[in-house]
Amino acid sequence: MRFVDANVFIYAVLKPRRKLNEKEQRIKDSAKKIFERINRGEEVVTTVLHLSEVANVLEDAVNLSFSVSFIRDILLKDNINVEDVSQEDYLESVVLAEERKVSLNDALAYIVMKRKGIEEIYTFDKHFRNLDVKVIEE
Image (cartoon, rainbow, N blue to C red; front, side, top):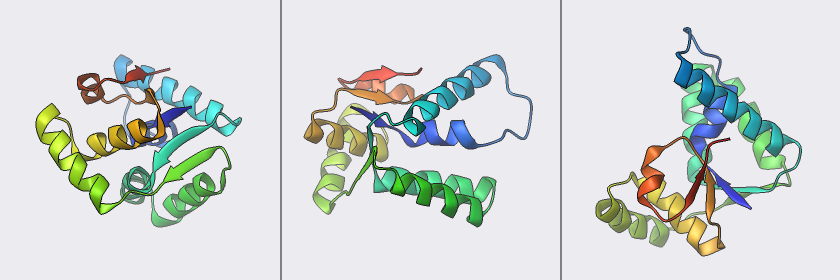
């Protein structure tokens, strides 16, 4: 099982407002492939916090209705395990973020991954390379 970062969902579903450069298009295409595998039943893990990130971006970029519908669909999928996060998790992520120079949410994903025994993450975020997990971009 792999963790799925918020950026995978965002790249997969957002329609660009401008022509993407080659790197951006490659990321978008990879995100779509990952998302298709998830939609076909691949089991993944994310957190309520990462879904909140997705919801905020989709609300701003598209609209509330689209965001609500997308998040509802994610929450209802049996193959997507959405983990809660605690205050203790977030406190631990503060320390890790400072030590490893990663964002709080990246640190939180890492903490949840370690707790669940997950070694691989779907993400396009380069900061995860500062952590001892395998980044999967396709």
